[in-house]
Length: 119
Image 1 (cartoon, rainbow, N blue to C red):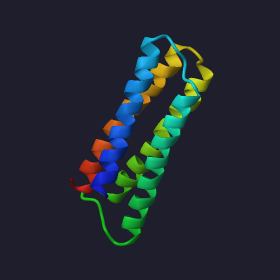
Image 2: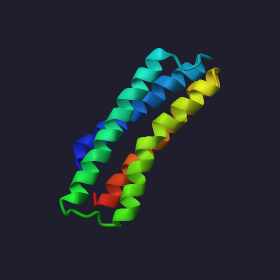
Image 3: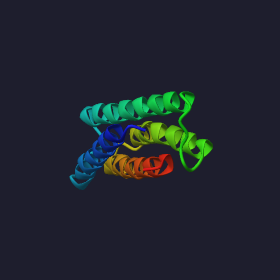
Image 4: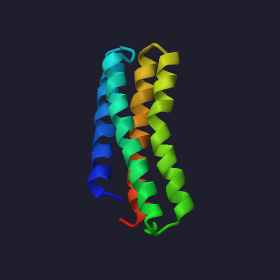
C-alpha cells in the first residue's frame, strides 16, 4: 500500500469528521458543501481500492491475509457513501453527527488497513 495515500485518506476523513461534527454542534444538517467533502474522501478511498487491487494483482501480498485486506478495502470504500445516504434520510443535526461518526470509523479502518498490509 502507499503510505502517503493512507495518511491522506485518514487526514481527510478526520477533517470531514471535525467539519460535520461542528455542523452537528451548531444544530445544522448536512449541506451541499459537506457532500462535496464526502465525495473527495470517497474518491480517495476508491483510489486506494484500485491501488490495493493492482498491488495484489502484481504479486504483492499483505501480511495478515488477502481476504481480510480486500474486505477492509471494500468496507473503507463503502463507509462514507453509506453515511451520506443516511444523512440524507435524517435531515437534522443527527445527519451531520452520523457523517462525523462514519468519518471517524473510516480513519480507524485506514489504520487497520495499514496494519494488515504490514505497516
